[in-house]
Structure formats: C-alpha cells, structure tokens
Image (tube, rainbow, N blue to C red; front, side):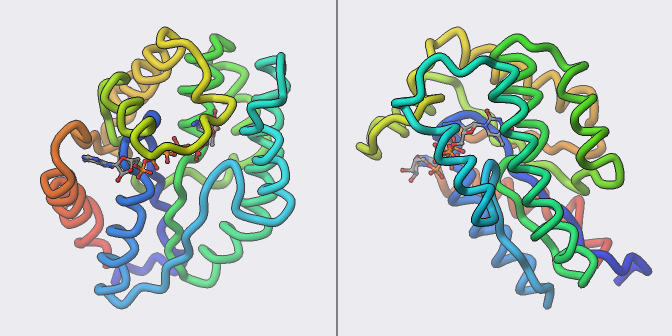
Length: 214
Ligand code: Z5A
C-alpha cells in the first residue's frame, strides 16, 4: 500500500457496444483479489435521483433535447453521484469503478454534439475540481462493430443509439484525442478483439498502472 488513504477512481469509457459492462466486472474481481473494497457505479446514474435523470436522458420518446440541456443534465446527475456515492466511498478508502464519467461528456457532448471542450471543462471545474480519475480505460471499437454488437443484444435503442453514424465517429475521435492528450491517465484498449484478448489487455493494464500502488 502507498500512503494514499483515499480509494482509487477508475473509469471506463468507449462507444456503444465497446464492452464496458463486461470490463467493469473484470476490474472489480481484480481489485477484490488485491483485498480492496470496491464500489461500482455508472453515469449518468448511480443514485436514485441520478437514475431518474438518466431515464430522461436515454428515453427515445424525448425528442429535440438541446445539446446544452443534455450536457447540464449529465453534470446534474454527475454532481449527485459524486456527492452521494463516489466521494464518500473514496474517503472511506474504497475503490470506485465508474462506467463512464466526464470524458463521456467531452466525447458525446463536446465532440459528438459539437459543443466544444471549453463548456464541458467549465462544468467539470464547477462539479469536481477536487477530483479526477486515477485511471481511465478507453475501450476503443470501430463504430460499425460496436453498433453490430448493440443490435445483437436486441434491446430497444436508447435516445443516443438513434443518432447518425457521423455523430458516433465524432464521439470515437473525441475519445481518442482525449487519450492522446492525457496518456498518463488513459490506457487505450483495442476492444475490436475477441473477448478473451480484450480481457487479457485489461488485466495487463491494471497490473501495469495500479498494481504498484496497492
Ligand atoms: N453519455 C453522454 O452522452 N455523456 C455523458 O457524460 C455520459 C453518458 C456519462 C449511456 O447509455 C449513454 O449516455 C451513452 C453515452 C451517454 N450512450 N449510449 N448509448 P448506456 O449506459 O446504456 O450505454 P453504453 O454505456 O454505451 O452501454 P452499452 O451499449 O451496454 O455498451 P457497453 O457497456 O460498452 O457494452 P456491453 O454491454 O459490455 O457489451 C455490448 C454487447 O457486446 C454485449 O452483448 C457483449 O456480450 C458484447 N461484447 C462485448 N465485448 C465483446 C467482444 N470483445 N467481442 C464480442 N462481443 C462483445
């Protein structure tokens, strides 16, 4: 153990069908095997109120939401998740695995909806100037392959999944640009590989970036 008493914040990012949900379970198992207490959460969501905001954001019946409204709702949900769940868990020394965080706002609202990064960074400063992820795993997958996987799941498409291809291409590029800017925080995983190879790369990244800290 290092002298860090707060837990680690590990975030998972990527486009649709990248495999974040599966990866989150793998990361939890790895941390628990190291004797760590782990709290899992997701964004938008994670608390009762934030889950209600999520329901509005993902509802395909909600038409014509403005990009700025979408961004503000993402940060309203994030503020709740941080205040009620993430910060208290980290303070208690628990690690938090969060399925999407502010990098998703940079990619989806900043790049995808073309709001630009300055507005996202301004809200990040308001909502969590004290905190940034210790490690971000970006599961990168070509847009067509990710959508194919989502389609195979057979669920109703959410409000985001109804967007056009160009939107998802901007999202993917937004994530890759963010990762290139902060290589010490990000680890990019090739999520186009089969599940076994993806999991092997995730475990290698955890060993490389986190094992020495625990
Ligand atoms: N959003 C935003 O715009 N701004 C923000 O700030 C935040 C979020 C925080 C949340 O929806 C939406 O909110 C999201 C961005 C936006 N847009 N959408 N949609 P969500 O949580 O429902 O959606 P998601 O995060 O994209 O979840 P997902 O579609 O379930 O993707 P995933 O978790 O990455 O994938 P998965 O469920 O683990 O895997 C999908 C399927 O592929 C599944 O059947 C797997 O068995 C299969 N899979 C996974 N990996 C593989 C490999 N390697 N090979 C083969 N098959 C695989």
